[in-house]
Amino acid sequence: MNTGSLEGRLSEDDDAITLHRKYVSRGRSQLASMFGGLVERSASGARVVTTDGQEFLNCGGYGVFFTGAGHPHIVAAVQRQAEQQALSTRLFLDPAVGPAARELISVAPAGLERVHFAGSGTEATETAIKLARAHGKRRLISMRNGYHGKTLGALTLTAKDLYQTPFRPLLPDVTHVRFGDAPALAEALRAGEGDACVVVEPVQSEAGVILPPPGYLKEVAALCQENGAFLVVDEVMTGLGRLGAWWGCDLAEVRPDVLLVGKALSGGVVPVSAALATREAFEPFDADPYLHTSTYSGAPIAMAAARATVEVIRDEGLVGRSAEIGARLLDALRGIAADRAPGLVREVRGAGLLIGIELADASQAGELLLEMVDRHVVVNHSLNAHPVVRLTPPAVITPEEEARLLEAVDGSLTALAKTFS
Image 1 (tube, rainbow, N blue to C red):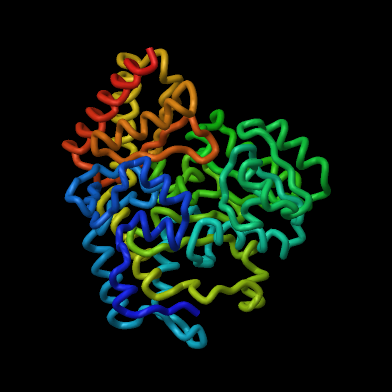
Image 2 (tube, rainbow, N blue to C red):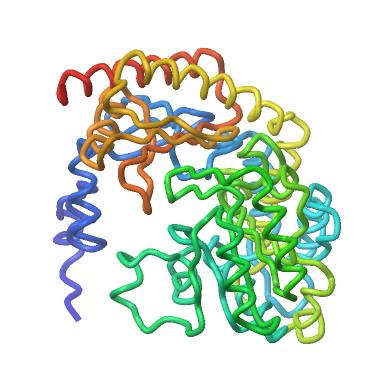
C-alpha cells in the first residue's frame, strides 16, 4: 500500500480534471476538457455557477432538475431529515417511507397502489423485470432505441449495440420492435403464450425525443391485455410533469402493471427512483419482503426529497407551467430553426419541457452543444441519437431565462449556419 506522507498528499495538484484523469476516468476528463474544463461550484433554480465565477442557464441535467436546483422547500425537508435520521437500521420500520409513498401514489394513475423505492432509474427497471419474472413473464419485449438503464438486466432492454456488445451475453428471450409500430408488437406478443413483459416509454427521450403516433400507448396496453402480457411503462424521464401532464400514462389514459419513476423525483437534491405497481403486480414482493431488497431503498433523506418534490410540483402548479412554457418554447424554437438554419435543422419536436433539436449529423449537434456553452447555456446530447440535442429546462424557469435560452439558440444556430454553409 502506497500511503505516502501527509505533506506529499496535500501538495498534489487538486485541479479537478487532473484528479479525474488520475483517479476517476481518463475519458471523462477528456470530455470535460472539450467543454473548457469548467467545474461546477453551486446551483440554484435554473442557474449553475462554475468555480471561476461564470453563471450558466441549466437546460440540461438529463431531466433531473424539473423543480430547479436547490428548491428551498426540498432542501429544508432533506436538512430536517438529515439532522433527525439520515439512514436507518433496516430492521425497524422507517417512518419517512410511508408518507413519501402515499404522496407519490396520490398523484399516480389510479390503480397503482404499491411503491418500491430505489436509487436510480436502472434500479427501478430491474425491479420491474424481477416483478414480471415473479409472475412467470420471462420473455422481454422493448423498443428499438429505447433507453432503460445500463445495469445488465436494464441493458438488455436498452436496445443499442454500442452499449450492449461489450457485455454480452445479456438476459435471454428478448425481442426489440420498432417504437410506434403496434402491428410489430402484436406479432411479437403472439409468438409466445402469455409469457411476455413489454417495456415502453411514452416518449423516447434518449432516442432523440421521439413521439409515437396518436393512440399508440393505449394500443400497446390493449395488446398486452389481449395477450396476457405484463406492461411496464418507463417514465423515469417523462414522469412528474415533464411532458406537461403528471404522466405520459395520463395523456394516453393507460394504467400499466408497473410505472417507473426517477429523475425529477430527486428534486435535484437526493438521488431516488421508484417502481409503482398495482396490488396484483406487486403481490410477490408483498408476500416475501426479502425477495427484492436494497440497503438504501427508502433511505430517510431520499424519502424526504421525494415527498417534498411531489408537494412542490403539485402546490406550485409546475405540471401546468411545463405545458405552457413548453408549448411557447417549442413554437419559438421552430421559428428560429426555420429562420437561422433551415438546411441544418431537420426537426424541432417535443412535449412539455422535453424538447429535441435534430441536426443533419452528429458533428453538427456536437458543435451546437459547444456554441450553447459559449453562450452560457447547458443542454444535453442524446445517448441513442447523436444528431439530437435535448433541452430539459426546469418548470421554474423565468420569462427572462426563457428569453436567454432562445437568444442562445438563435446565436448558436446562426453561427452553425455560417460554419456549415
